[in-house]
Image (cartoon, rainbow, N blue to C red; front, side, top):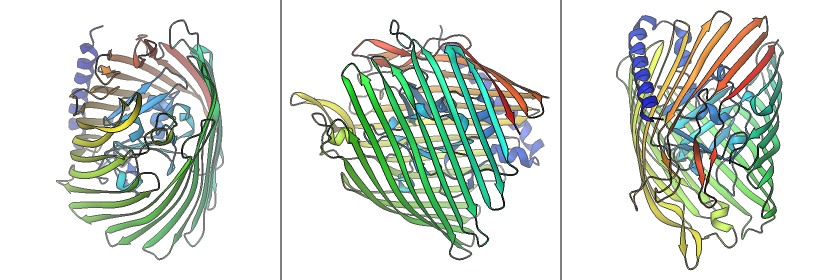
Length: 607
């Protein structure tokens, strides 16, 4: 197919949406409900609630309504081609997935679930593919370095998933569905609030026979069972206690074997008002990534666990806010392979000032990490924002971050290099946001320099990781949206130039161009919508010899509230059955196909 045609079409659609935003904005400025949707509160960017324009960061929020309309099978389906976001996978339905923010590696994109970080200490990144999207009500994507707030690996940004808190009368919800590839899905939840107590409990089950991700290798199935509990109680004096527990387990088949997996987060927190202006919060948490692998090389077990204690204090001083705290984390590895070291700990202190000198806003933060494995790192950031008028906010920021070497890179026997240093980065960004009542647009330009990039190099008769590379990543992101006349419209355009400065080649598996358009319309008891995604080519190898073609896909959806409390939803994915790959196995000379045309239907009851 002619790859330029989808890109041109989406570009014209994006331009039309920008014109619609400009035309509708002033006429609808009094619509507070639309303003809350299009300028939502964000907590990930600054550790404190701020509207999108006040956050002084490039942010994208996917709210509950969007998640329910799109009803993705995988959480990364909702992330794909959002501003600054690139997703690669080794096939659909529970296969290895990577999420790249602003051209940085998948290990440089931390994933948080209600403030608890989930990742594999051995591989570095989280297992995105095992997270059930129906159990979350909100996704926040913050782009740009956040090392001074979250520590290691927040180079390209941070993604945080939020679970429902519970509100109002006890509300049950049950959903049953299925579709292509003999897929079956079921989920159930109960949420509510009684006095100062909020609760949310949920469970889900997904089974799929999968499809042939590689010709001649047979269908590769997947199953997932997830349970979630969130409970909190607010006391009369303002204190609050809460607990979160999420556990996902199942099996995924891949070419040459299968994996039994467990993904788990658990945490308890207590928050106390010391004075009217000072609140203190202590969170104790644990995250687990466990896998039991059976493949052509035999059986192996890799279990990683991270335990964290985080103390955070927030002090209000007039219109200003100060945040300070400390964090202790310990990683442990238990595996059939005897790692040279199987644990490490990290101690950190951090502080942030959120200053309001209206129309000028200032955000400054600093963090110091001391890691048992790779030493000390200090990161910081400074952001300035100016409200030019009631509509436009100009922002500029500078920040540093680092990526920590993984256990595999430091300690895997016969491969590791214990002398590795962390990758270090410096980023600068300039952004302009327009908030026009029923519409918004956000434009950002950025540049990131990364030193001491870790790469596999053949030396002394073996391949091992070394600090040998430098990278320069620059890009432009444009996001826009409008809620007009029963239409909900969102669009994103991303250009990224991730270059290895040693070779002049593009960093592997990053697409340089992407476009996304989401459009939905309410028609009485019906909703109709679709998502169009186009991405340019990428390279599977450092030499840029293995080119993976760009692609464009169209998804369609329809929902019907056919009775009080009852609804049904139909989704058609990859309507034109485009065949594409984002990951290639060079050794075996085959690509991992993403799913072709697929249809899914579900029926839900909410009391």
